[in-house]
Length: 391
Image: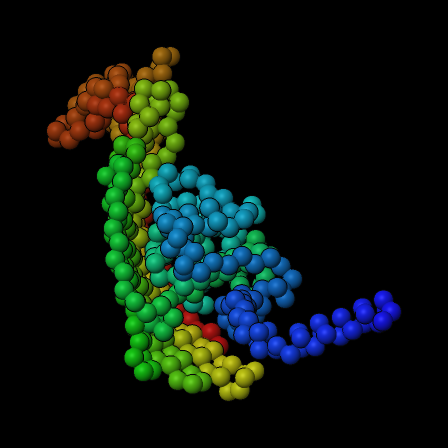
């Protein structure tokens, strides 16, 4: 046989042997392949990759693993272009800044972000402020942070919008309890419970946070509660959600460097106290007429009562504040007139700092405080009600 014929016979024999044993190839087991779908946005589930602006998302598992103090703390640590400014000096009252635009609890601040929970706007009606202390992080199933000034999100959506979707018994069944403590007498507790049976579901979660703060007179106390009940069929879903919060926060302002050199815990003026009492309820319904036609409705009521008490230094002279002195001598002391004195002193008397005066009836007209002891206490009461519906 020629060499070419020998090679041909050998190859033919090898191919015949391989083809005669197909069962060895059929028994090969491949490893599992997980296909992860694109992340849908809240609402009708649009693919975020099809939108002309950047969208950042997070789910309940990511929030749980982060162990953040609250929603704003998580956003600053895990979402890009988000930063916190602690101007109020309380951990639950930060100014959240996204691309230079702000969502802040400080009334009068320039607000540039809209925040929604289950389709309900939670910017306060008065000043569009955002109170992060009334949002329980344990109730959040997912969030979307969307950039851009989209008019669909309403007024002051200059830099973007934050959409929050909450848990229910269908999506998050189970039970958990946790508690922790730390420095400056910080202690906290949290629980959640959810379940479903047939077409019905329930979910409830609560948080309690309390600490003394690392500075003097800077304690915080926050209580949050969220619950929902739902019903679901093949094409229709109903859900009633209720949220409540009661917070008492102290965040005293900045201190001069000279004071901090003496004691880092000292505060310059106090108290700076804010109390929020939130009550909120919403009822939502989704009904699919076809695979492409969805009717979605939400009816809501939201009330937040806010009390503030703020102590500041006064620019007024102690005598001008209480004795209404109308004249100053060359040394800058207040000269009292007979009418102002009321018989308790002589017209033209000079009243020194710390000197207490009374009128002829024994009423104090000057409390006798030094200039460095006087202050102005500002107090405010704000009741905010918001109600509406969307379709």
